[in-house]
Length: 220
Image 1 (cartoon, helix red, strand yellow):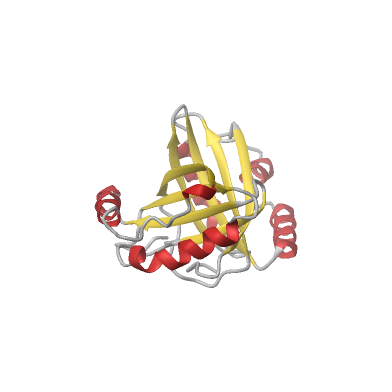
Image 2 (cartoon, helix red, strand yellow):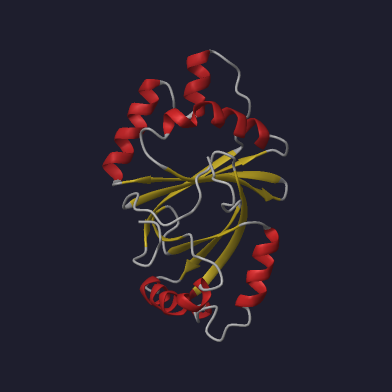
């Protein structure tokens, strides 16, 4: 559960980079970060290991859209921000995620060496049912491994549900997935089958990636 005053939105930026450039991009980002982080704190930064490779994923938490707009305007005036990485960027995307009521805040924590970012697409109107279904079982699920963040974003014709989990390593991830499924508490489809109920919402498309934190990420 978020504490009062915690961030309620997260801007999740994804940069798909040219091969052999991630180390250079990370170094330039790290060098330019102090001035930008003085405007608002970095939530997390990861590089992709499984999924679309050579991606840099950056998370910025904000109290609301007004703060996001104010910080964006102030950051645009900085001399060395954004970092000089355009020559290496093949694609870039931005998601503005509204955190669910049960989502923890993006604050500096040591959670693990491997993070999983999962993105589900739903038809419009389904997100309240997703939040309701998760709210029923999330307290049991996080006993196995920490939830980093969960929330929804408008993706035009679809709505996206984005959730991020932390693990010590890939072996722990596989073990926990097996244990939670066997216990009938995760994923939600397993809960629905255990209770013999019709699903509240069914995703149209699912994707995930395994990422590792950069050395300057507040989340490790």
